Length: 150
Length: 150
Image (cartoon, rainbow over all chains, first blue to last red; front, top):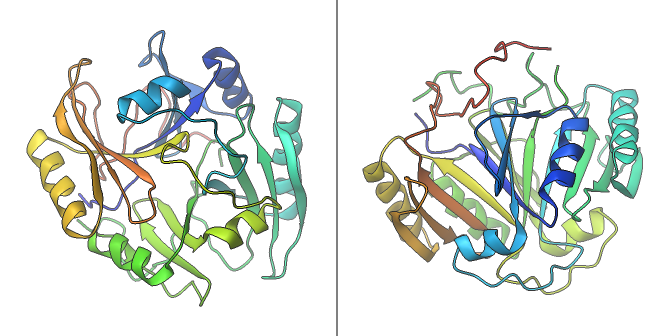
């Protein structure tokens, strides 16, 4: 088992039910694993966890100061085409996201846009014609590495 | 292909080589896909991308304000035991991380700690005896879902 994994990404949110509904509308599966203070949504090989913003800070022993629009972290979903990128972007807007940058052709030869979720977390949707995706839609940029390397 | 994926997590960093060396020390594989302004590190089913903090903000069309210690997002790695959690925590400290909360037994019955990477990004290392991991070390909290659901 490699240490180089992200098993779970946790987003601090102000309204757990609103945030969960948003991600369910984007295709994430809400699981039974949560409780009144945390929601776990299963994605492809990764769990998205939603937790009260103040509680998340407290869990790490930090203070939940007001967050800037840009938080130094973006989450990305690579899509197999420009049309698929537009489709998911519009789905996100329909579910309550804010358009930060509509998908457009970008200098590196791809197609990319950003939306903010209802709590301001930034997601990039991108089609990168130079990145191969496996059948699950996940990236492998190191094809030399055996799939089941330990 | 499900939309519910995170193909890539991008962290804004102040020193690309320092940040890359940190994650390589934690087991991530630096790939050939990057260039002088971006590093792509392959992990299990997910790419960790490192990008200049100001450039990342600019890419989204936002301003890189000073970031608070708590940014409303945490990345987590679930480990198969308390001892493995301690081991990876110490590896991170040895590679230049700051201990935010040493792993300890927590109220929900697991064992969890936080470190900050050299740019202040928060990682949780946790052993959760109630979460099953697959052979790759990834979580599946929705076992009813077929592995290859489209």
